[in-house]
Length: 149
Image (cartoon, rainbow, N blue to C red; front, side, top):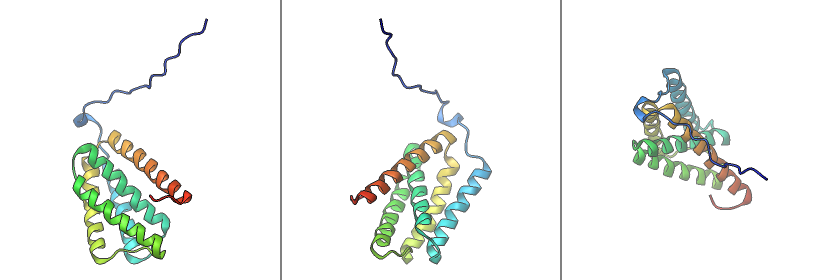
């Protein structure tokens, strides 16, 4: 006689959103520095493809966090549209850079991403990072196969 197996996922209960631990000051500082360095590298023309993808990944991460927190969604949608244009231009011309309005929007986006990070709790941030990494992997896999992103 065989035993039945339970295929349930383990669900770890979390406290209510307001009682979850937030990102600490050191993490917020590191995130802000990374966001600013990536935008500055693209603005100065010092960025490579990896830097561009880091910028896109951070925008996807905080866009997802904004959706989960219901805070800053419109601004992050604008960031994603702007970065899609930068990526499309990079694939066409192999040059990484911002136009004037794009740079202004990117700098505003850094402020919004920092505000979202300050409001975000650690479990939500980790979930947003996992979602973002999976999204970037899927986009890169589609590009390798020659499919539109």
